[in-house]
Length: 52
Image (cartoon, rainbow, N blue to C red):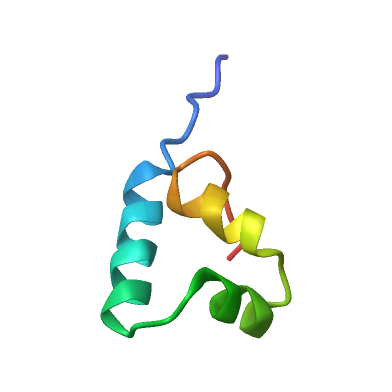
């Protein structure tokens, strides 16, 4: 059985839109979540996933 790859693009877009509407930077969100700003960038671009 082949597992279908998940497209993280729509989630990243929604997160970016929410962040910019609140006028927060990637660095601010990263600090609050305890991750790097690089990771936030990768999530927003759909290159990386996130744990729920």
